[in-house]
Length: 260
Ligand code: NDP
Image: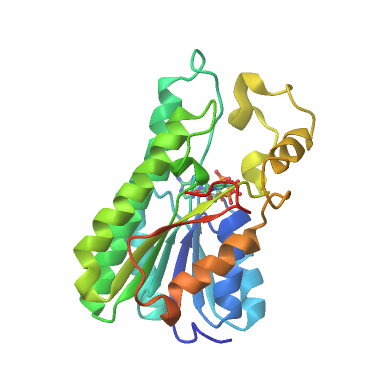
């Protein structure tokens, strides 16, 4: 399939994990790609996408910085002539018991996961509206936008917020050929779950490497955690013409973990 030939997709947090898997899928189907991240490796990641025969650029951009987000979308327009698909994927998590959860953790999580999605959606809509050829916004929420997990009230709040942004904007732009949908990945094996102090804080050490993922998998009806490509398939569908009549929706990709 070459559903995205001639189109341009921006993917934030796109240098690895779920973001890179989605970008790879868009590229495999012909889209030019703009990867954005706070990591230097974003340029290498973009050059790997060029192997698919598309053009791709990697841009350092902190999604919490409005000026940087504006510059990102301007660069995409200058380089590729517009933005057709905007995937708000950049996200962070920390895990802590309530007595240890610091105010900075709340603020940092809301800044990236919720404000970052808002800023990118705002910029994407303004550009798509001006170009007048519609567009697709895909916001990466989480299973925690359905059902907050333990030790992560800040993350759950930030992801419930993503669903709210999605529904509100979907209504605002419905007559402009722009759809806005959200994806709720379940437990996907990426660096987000790597065993480091930043993520696990004081809980580090309660689980050995791999143990927690194995334990979680037992609660999933399909008995496996997900991979980036599981999410990429849905993102590609939502960005395609087959999803023309779908907007404001929030869809789980989680092997049946959450059924609401
Ligand atoms: P990764 O940690 O692998 O990737 C997240 C990417 O976002 C990283 O490249 C990260 O850079 C980047 N990023 C972080 N902060 C910013 C910022 N301010 N501006 C731009 N980029 C930033 O995570 P995943 O691929 O697992 O997660 C992708 C999305 O999916 C996130 O929104 C996450 O919340 C969501 N999700 C993931 C699940 C999972 O099980 N993996 C489950 C449900 C939802 P750096 O590493 O330098 O911080």
